[in-house]
Image 1 (cartoon, one colour):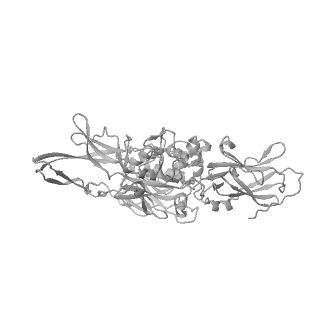
Image 2 (cartoon, helix red, strand yellow; image 1 turned 120 degrees about the vertical axis):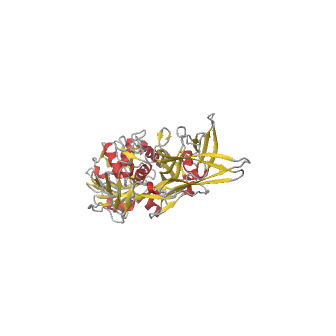
Length: 596
């Protein structure tokens, strides 16, 4: 476009704006917002967009007008929630504007929002001075403008210089969340769906529900901190209710969700927290919230994740004098895995060098400044052990790098350490690789290299070898006790299933190996599940719900070795490669998925 403006002699007719065209076909591709399924224009801050205003006559030199962008219930220029964009020599505000082209009564304007502008939904008006005050165009919902963070803008704090990473961490609407154990990693496909109908409005609804001041919604650090708290319902009536009890009768099991959209839309439509979630669900939905608002984000899985309940940066496991676990007094725990998020942002509130990936965690574990939330905590600060910086660096450090201290209580009640494991916690930290479905091991971004140990593989017999070493000159008779429990991935005991007590005689200055301590045999398994893609075969006889992406079918009974087939028809909204995920969920078995 050329910057040409033709003025006409002094008019006798007052200027009036007849129509506003937000030029979506021109703006959306340039702002990478074409995929948002909505009627209004979505643009990113710090980058020019165009809009066309049709007046009742051509512009004249003495015409006094500006374009207003208002957000919130009480827009104010002092709070940055009422922006007045002027043109020519009339001065300029925080947003800049220019006239790109004027053809008769139609004028094309270029508007560049400040790179630190408030993020959210703006109303758009054209205001004209009439000599009797300002006359504004009537409210028109079709011209409302959604403004997002901009990972493509070097002046935005969320700027991400690598285009492949921007495509992955902002624009990719599906992903993989890792579960299982460090030696037997499993993959859960997850549909983020940040561009689907109603999701952007749902994210803004969450901010409104949190009562976050409008003027804070351009500050990425404050916004992600609010989002971390609002994903859980623990203390602020947030999006999801956590449940680790294995009783999901009042809602949906966490394992039954395949994506974020249903959860966010249900919350936005009802205002009632959605039942139920666990860590990967919190992380998946939070990732949708972040990417939808334009913040580069990814889901992280930390294997052997510690929960330091006491805040001493250690994981203390207590045992009684006879060697049995003291569950009543043990406050710390170790999860098989735990999922959280990272966001890419600068940290102007911290010293230089602490920008980059920041940990944010919405699973309600501990409070931070009075709310159940965590972060943002700079990953580099966690690695370097700089735990004094906000927010919650110490807690995250303990999750990935604390020592496991085993303590035994004597008959007087005193605790004495008898073993310290420095390598078990944070054994592996994974996220999805950029541009592929492969794993990206990012353990070295959180901690320096350390030793590792071998773990048994899920599904194999558990065979233990106990070694007893006599360091004295007298023969010793030892009575040992092995305690066996079934635990959830959070470390919480689901059931106790076996105790093994055995005697060993150890000669002076010798070692004695006690082998064949088999605590679980493969023939004890109660079911086998075979997953095909996307077909599933199972041997379950109780009610199952099988879900194919957004479609769900409930079967009261699936006979052993039966094949269930049904057909769904849908029309793809966007071009490009897409995955179909099928999930089977019932009380007897969880997390049975197939993807094609």
